[in-house]
Length: 513
Image 1 (cartoon, one colour):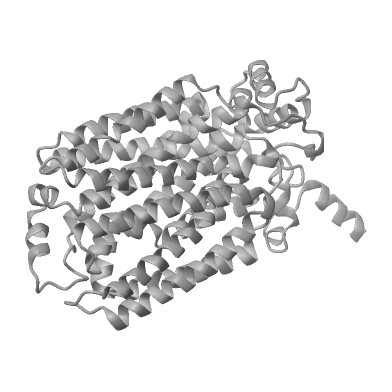
Image 2 (image 1 turned 30 degrees about the vertical axis):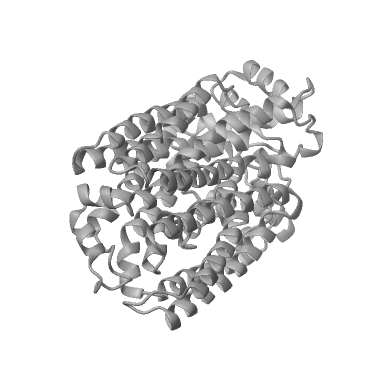
């Protein structure tokens, strides 16, 4: 919604109690197919770390890292510190950052499905280039095309899920994106575990198999129905009604459709959504669109998932054991996301974010202490301490999987009014990919510089974000997406930031007379 409480920014009143309908097989299938877009993001996160720990890959493209890895006297924390190797991982996210901004007008003017198809095609071509790469330039070109695919997919898929899902299940169904992401990570870890035995071309199979989820995403985007919100916004109101009736399983969708019509009238009057989103009445949503994805990355989770095999090898695990341990963390992430899906629309977003944050802080502190006391530059962890480290990394991943993992995407995708929704999601994805790029590019150097303190660095950020949620994030559970803006006017802090409405201004003038 864009709420009448802010003047002319969307629907004029709350109609949530008049919404009718049920959970239909149509909406479940649409959400499941759309969520496949998350699997390409997850597959790449999982595959990159495994491939960059394979000797054949390093020897062909990053020979200096390969030679450094074999030197016994090299510091445990610094053996993988190479900006070229980091660029292999991070170049994708820089390309994604740029492409997600380009995806915004496509998503708005041509629909959510158009961006999903564009993302799938680009990712498919990029996977082919990576699998057949014969030099570093070809490898990086493939990574850039993968990034374009992720930029389009991450921009459109969360929006699609939020708009298709019924209000009371929006959190759980929106998390299908994160579930697909975690399944992609787990699948990639298992693929790496198998392909490391296929010397010398196993890494090519790992990278090439990314084409499979990309193909599914492309076909899914082609056959899926467009969201009713997007159809109404583009003037196709009757078609939007028919899709909404199928999604809700009832002909009585007048209240929900009217909210969409009201929101679309304002949306179509906004010619420059990126400029509009900077206005004061959108300040709370803009802050969340920047802070939620930034904090999601600053939990440190991507560092663990990108470089899990490298990280475990750094801590003294053998090559096979390190890939096995990273596969374990991937499986844990999938299971914890399922926990979040089952609880988010019962306990709410805030409870999961705060409890997850506390658990992550404790786990990171314990891992840092163990590595600081028991793990030096040229020594390996004992088997007992290695097991303890893996356990607490898994507990960290569990906490992330039920909190910041899915909710870092869910909350920004559900809080914007229609007129700035596509632009808002682009900002969310751009910030996510920008910080993913920074962390991916800097992590190996940070690991070398901070050593065990890297976990305390991220624990400090988790402390900041947990406090942020406690004081500044209102509960969005059960609030219709087209009536979300009314929520900020009721919040103790944001109501002081937002401009007064015409109605409030008149009331204040009358009371002063």
